Amino acid sequence: MKRTLVALGTVSGLVLAGYLLVISLRIKRQSTHDEAHRADVIVVLGAAEYSGRPSPVFKARLDHALSLYRKGLAAHILTTGGAGGDPHFTEGDVGRAYLILRGVPSEAILVEPEGSSTVHSLTAAFEIMNRMGMRSCIVVSDGYHIYRVKKLLESRGLRVYGSPRPSEAPADLRAWWLYLRQSVGYLLWSIGVPV
Image (cartoon, rainbow, N blue to C red; front, side, top):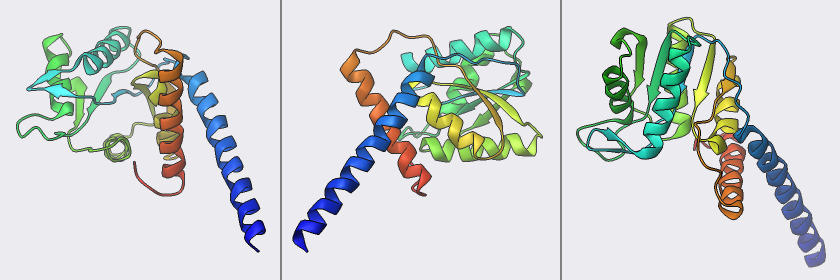
C-alpha cells in the first residue's frame, strides 16, 4: 500500500510538473508576441506607484498604452490597480493622471481603482467594459503576464490582444522563474483560486 501511494504521488508530481512546463512554454511564447490590433479599449495592468507617481515598470506600461492610443488602435484606455497600502493614491488613478498630463482626454480614460490582485482588477475591468458594451481589448503589461491576463479575459467572452510593454529580456533564470510563477497563478485561477 505504501509503495502504491509513493508511486501515485510520484506520477502526480510528474504530471503537475509537465503541466506547469507546458504552460510556462506558452507564457514564454506569448511574452514577446505583440498582437496589438484595433479594439474597443486598451487595458493597462497596474504596477507600483510612489506617492502619486508611477513606478518605472508602470510608467513603461502607460507609455506603451499611450503609443497604442495615439496610433488610433482604441478610443479608450482603462487603467487598473488599487491602493496597495497607499492611503492617498491608487494605481488606477495614478495611471489616469499620468495619461491626462500627456494629452489623453479625461473622457477617454476609464479607471478601475480597487483591484488588489490580477484577478480582482480584471474582474472589475470586465464589469466596466461589459456595462459600456465593449467586447474587445488590447492588454498592456509585462510580457510574462500577458498569457494569464488574456486567458482570464477570454474566459469572459472578450476578444483579447496582448501587447507587452517594451523591455529588456530578463536573464534566462529570472525569466523562467517569472514564467513558472505565472503558470502556477494560471493553474490556481483555473481551479478557482483568485490570485
